[in-house]
Length: 179
Image 1 (cartoon, one colour):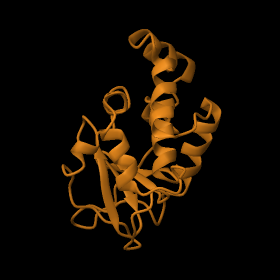
Image 2 (cartoon, helix red, strand yellow; image 1 turned 180 degrees about the horizontal axis):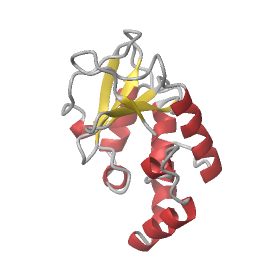
Image 3 (cartoon, helix red, strand yellow; image 1 turned 45 degrees about the vertical axis):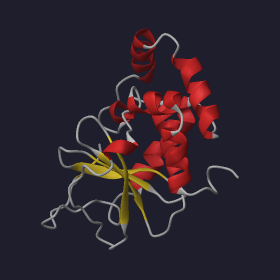
């Protein structure tokens, strides 16, 4: 069974069942399934159901949009600062993004930090970054797309945010799109 055919619970279980995967995704990935319950009530304009799957260290939350248990549902990120948007077409693609570009938020349109500089910075902090990426990717049964492909996927997903995937707060106020 490939990760695109698996269910969310099984994929998250593989993360939590592997200390190395869980630690890498927590840092530098900033994706922690154990924080999925620490989120505020949001909804989508379309009424599409949301399932919190992980949180980050800054109070943000990752959600899967749509009904069912499949990992192939789109993934939305909502920050604690009132920004939100679609970041991946599926949970496996979101994990590939977090593994390959743990600094993905610095690659958003309008922020455009030089990827080579970000990679060098993370490489100096984590000298074994590429080896760890390879091991975690293998542990989770994911692929390891190159940087241009990950950026293309991220920007394509972000472009699909408005209007159906732009989160609304508890009082119906729209979040600011991720840019």
